[in-house]
Each structure stands twice: as C-alpha cells, then as structure tokens.
Amino acid sequence: MVYFITAEQLGISELGPGKNLMNNYIHALTQHKDTPNTILLVNTAVRLAAENAETLEDMKNLAERGCEILLCGMCVNYYELNDKIKVGKISNMLDISRIVNKSPKVVTL
Image (tube, rainbow, N blue to C red):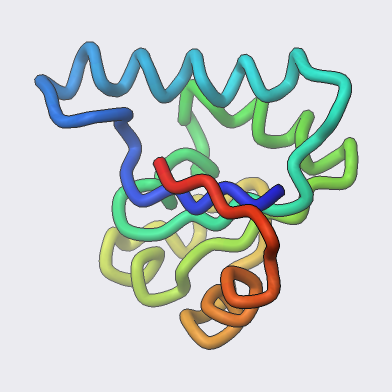
C-alpha cells in the first residue's frame, strides 16, 4: 500500500478542520496492524515530516515499523524545510513516480 499525500490538510476546507483531519488520519494509520509500505509527501504535505509538526511522532512511529517515507525535494526546498525535516528521506519526482507506477494500490490524499 502506497499513500500519496499532496497537502498538509485533508480535503478542501478551512485549514483548521482540514489540518485536524489529516493529523487524525495519520494517527489512525499507526493504529492498524498493517503498516503502509510507503508514504510519499509532496507539496505542503512535506510539512507533516518537519519539526514541530503535530504528525511528527506518528510519522516516526510508522517509519520505525518499516514504512518508507519519501519527500519531494523540490517541495522541501520551496518551503525552506531542508534543515527541519525530522523523518523520512528527501527524494525526487523520478523516484516518486517509479514507486507509484510499480505499486498495485495507491491511495491519494
């Protein structure tokens, strides 16, 4: 299972509710027996793996359980988060697209 996460919030709404929904969704992933194989973070979703993110501990938990977390390097640079990423690996769109193409199941949030 691959999760392709494109924003720090879930759905289109005011940032508050949408951000809380995403935080809760990431936390819910830690409650399942099965861990996602990969989480791909692009656009503002790269903030979910940065210092002070409400999702940081849950993301670390998923990584410790074997989930590969890849972040779009261009996005990390754009949001000036290079020295603030605390979990996962900074990658590129070539690697991200390869993972999406190989995966039998991709969930986009």
